[in-house]
Length: 397
Ligand SMILES: *Cc1c(COP(=O)(O)O)cnc(C)c1O
Image (tube, rainbow, N blue to C red):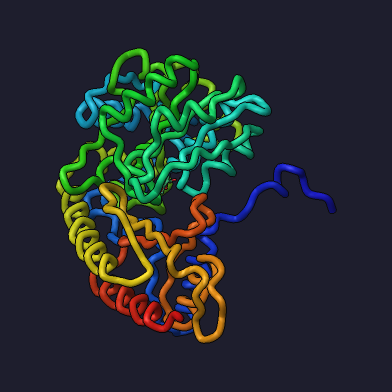
C-alpha cells in the first residue's frame, strides 16, 4: 500500500527515539541515566491536581467550546497582562491540546503550498516537520551555537525570498537555551515589518530564565508587531504539566477564529478536566514556578561547571529552558574501543550502550556536531551521569 508523499516526508522525532531506547533499557533493569528528557521531572503541583479532581467530581466531563472554556481564556489573558503587559481579549485566544498542537494550528492557518518559514537553527526538532505537514517549506537559518545560537536581522536577510511568510522565534530556546534581548528582538521585528511576515513566537520556556536574563515577548514591543505575532505558549513546562496537554495561542481575532475552526474539525476541545486544571495553574499561587526554576538553576550551574572541565566538549552558558547544548566536534574522528566516532549519533549510541547514559545527538536539531543534555533530572542523576560521560571520554583515542 502506498502512503502519501506527506507521510513519507516526515521523520520520527529523534528526541523521542533516544528516550524510547533509554526507557527500554531501563525496563530491562539496566541502570540508565537519562539526559534525554524534554519535560520537567517534578510532579504537577498539588493545588492543580486538586482542581482536576474537583472537575471530575462536579461532572465537568462533556464537550466544551472547541477553542477552550471562557474561564480559561480569561485566565490566559490575565497572565499575558501580568507577565508581559500584553492586552488580549478572550476572542484572541485559542486553547489547544498543547503548544505543539497550537503550532500545528498556526502553520495550517497561515501557510499556502510552497510558502516558506524561516526557522533559526539549532531548532526544536518538530518545527520543520510541522511546516511540511502544513504544505509549507521549512528554511533553516543557521546561527552560531557557540555564539549562543542567536538569530540576527543580517542572517534573516540572507534567507528572505518572495515566498517567505513567517519567522519562527523560540526564546528562551530549546535546545540552545538562548534568550533574545529587547534589542535583538527589535531588529528581528523590523525585518518582519519591512517584509510583511508573521512571527510565530514559541514562548513555552518563558518562566525558565537564569542569571539575570529577562524574557521579553516580541509582541510587547509595539502594536504593529503585536498584530503580526502569534504567541504560542502552554502550561507544560512552567507548571510541570506535560501530560495534561494544554497549550494556547494569542493572536489577531481573524487568525484565532480560523485556528478555532481548524481545531473544531480535527480534535474538538482540549480535555475538559485539564482545562480546569490549567485555570488553577494560571490563577493560583505562582511560587511553585519559582521553586522549580531555582532547582533548575542550581543544576544548570553545577552541570555547566563540570562540562567546562571535560575534554573534547565545550558549551556556552544557556540562559533559559533546561538544556545544555554541547559542542562535541572535537570528539569526532576519534575512536572508542576500536569503533570510529564519525558523528554524534555514533557517539550517543556508544555512550548509551557502554556507559548507560542517554544524551540526544544534534542532527535532529540541525546541528550534527552537538549533543543535547537535559537537566530536567535529579542532581544525583546529573552527578552520576556526568561522571559516566567523563569516564567515557577518557577512553577516546
Ligand atoms: C516542549 C516544547 C513544546 C511543546 O509543549 P507542549 O505544550 O507540551 O505541546 C513546544 N515548543 C518547544 C520549544 C518545546 O520544547
